[in-house]
Length: 383
Ligand SMILES: [Zn+2]
Image 1 (cartoon, helix red, strand yellow):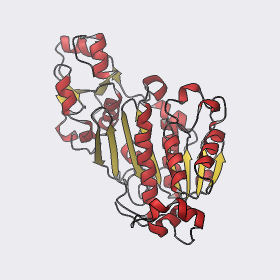
Image 2 (cartoon, protein in one colour; image 1 turned 135 degrees about the horizontal axis):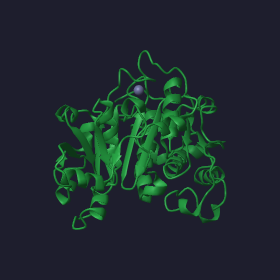
Image 3 (tube, protein in one colour; image 1 turned 90 degrees about the horizontal axis):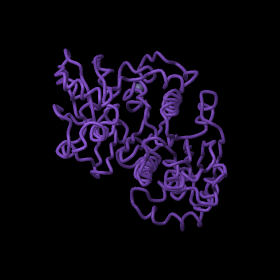
Image 4 (cartoon, helix red, strand yellow; image 1 turned 180 degrees about the horizontal axis):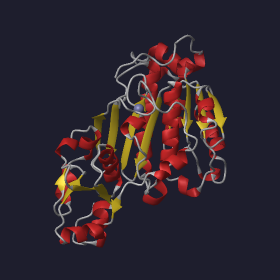
C-alpha cells in the first residue's frame, strides 16, 4: 500500500550530515528531502534485544533524528548470540545504557531517549505520544497486544515482528489505512513456546529486524509499498519469503468503526494467560489413529516439507490459506479437526484462526512432526 510520507521535510542537512548520508542522498527516491524526513523523525523501539538490536543500529546509522528505547532488562551472557547491540563487556549492565552507548558510537549526530521501564498500561500511551512511529521489538504476546491497542487508540503506525526457531513474521499496522494485530489474531495464541524454551536462530533476528527497519524508513520517507495489510512470513530453512494479504475485521474490538474497547486493558498479561487453545500430544493422536476415530487431520506446513515426512492421514493445507481465510471453506463442519506442523508453532497459529471461524471441535498437535518422530515413529525423517 502506498501512503504519504509520515514526517515533514522542513529542515536542512548540515555539512556533517550531508557527508555521512551521501550514499542515501544519491538515491533519487530518497535524495536530500528523504534524508531530512529521516532527520526529523521520532521513532521509539520497544525492546533492545534480538529484534531491537538490528532495528536500533540500522535506524541510528540511517540518521533517524530521535530514537527512543524502552527496555528494563540487563545484559545476560545468553543474549549475546543474537542481541548484537550488546557485547561481552556489557554483561550485567542495563541494556538501555549498553544500547545507547552503541548507538552514540554508530552515529553521534542523533538524539537518543531512554525509557527504562517495563512497558505497561500505565505508561504506554504517554511514551508513544511523543513519537511519530513505534516499533515492536518485544518477545511476548502481552506487550504485542498492548502496543497494538495503544497505537490504534493514538492513531499512530507501528511495525511488529516476531521470531521463533527458524520462522519469522513482520507487518505494519496503521489502523486508518489497514488491519491491526487484533484483526489478524483476535485472541492471544498459545504461548507454550517462547524463545527461551523453543530457541531462536540468532541471525533470524537480523532478517526480521532489518525488514522492520526497512519498513520504518519507507513509512518515514513515503517511498515504496508498505507492509500495511500484508503479513510477511519468512522461513529460513526453505529460504522463502511469503506475502499474505490480511484484511480489516469489521468486528475488531479496537479498530472497527464502532469499537467495543475504548481504552487499554488493565492487565495484558492476564488477558494473554486466559486463553489456552486445545492441544493434544502425539501419543494421544497415535491412539486416536489406532482406534480408527473419525477426524480430519490437517498438515499446515509447506508442500516440500510434506514430501519429506508426514503423519499418516494428514491432508496438506499450508498455513497461508488459514491466514488469508481461503482454506476455511474446505474444512468439514461435522468432524473434529486436528492440525499439525513441524514443531507446533504454525499449527497453533492456524488453530487460533480455525477457532475464531467457529470450528469449536478443533485442536493441534503439541511438538508436531518433531515430537511424532521422537515419541511415536523414530523411522521418520526429521529436518
Ligand atoms: Zn483491528
